[in-house]
Structures are given as C-alpha cells and as structure tokens.
Length: 196
Image 1 (cartoon, one colour):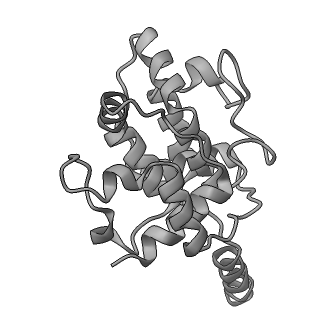
Image 2: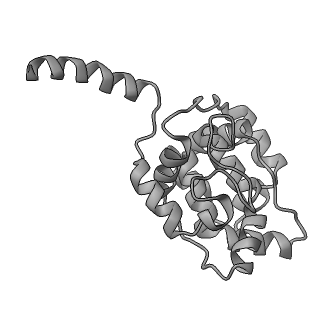
Image 3: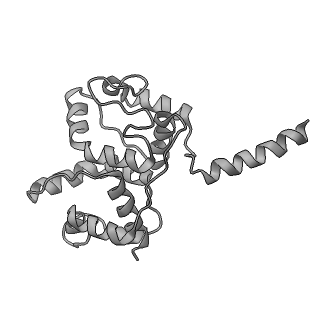
C-alpha cells in the first residue's frame, strides 16, 4: 500500500513542480495577510472591501508577475491607505510574498507571462527605472550585481522594503510613480536577470 502511494505521489510532485505552482505556503500566507492587516482594506479572504479584491483566477493575483505588477502599480495608494489607517508599513521579504501569493491565488495560477529581456530593457528605460538604477549619484542600487536572482516575489519585497525611498527620490526629481502590467513586470525581470 505504501509503495502504491509513493508511486502516485512522485508523478504528482513532478507535475506540481513543472506546472510552476508556488512553493509558498497558503497557511502562512493567510496568517501573514491577517497580521499585516491587509484584510482591513482587502477583506478577510482578499475578496475586496475599501480596496480592490485580490483573490480569484482573473484578479490581480492570477500569476506571480500579475501580483507584483498590481502591487507595484498601486503602491502609492496602498501606502496612503496604510498611513491613514495608522498601520505600520510592512517589510515583506520574498518568501512572505510567495506565501501571500499561495494564499490569495488559492493554488490556481494561469502562469506567468513569458518575459523577454530585449522588451524588458525598453520598459526599464521607458518607465524611468534606468534613470536612477543606472546612475551612480542617485542613491539607487545598481541592479546588475543581482542578475539571476530576480523574481516576482523579490520585486514585491523590493517594493515594500525600499519603495518609500524610491518614491522620495522620484518626487525630488519631479517624476511620477510608474504603472506596470504583468507582461512589463515579466519583461523587466527577464532583463534584470540577464545583466552582468
């Protein structure tokens, strides 16, 4: 009997790995969603409230890149809401972002769009990322040193850990916060992972 179960488990494990299922833990994501007070605006299950719904296969959490793009695009509004509610801005790491995705996606994912490094370079420049991250005197890190380590989850982490500083530098330079689609996020990640 045990042998039979092991024979069944192996193909299922391989299938899950090949399908791109998140390694995040939904149970940890649910606890994190509550402890970070995301539920106070997005609803206790991410179904929406004073802020948009997050859960569901067609929503902003339909893929890891879609989640990262949605958070990136709405960051300034999220920060305003967090500040108005007198909630401390969270410092989310990549593992926590992965757990949040696992919880909000409910295990379903359309998969990430395929990123293209050439398009990513164009988006990186058009969305003004290069104007800080490729200049030595802006205080922004040179991202080439982290090539090969970028993911949707690391982008969410960067947003929550360094976004306030990015926004302050952009405001000081009279630049607007940029909005990204899931495809643009995938392209930027592909580009950043190829830089040396």
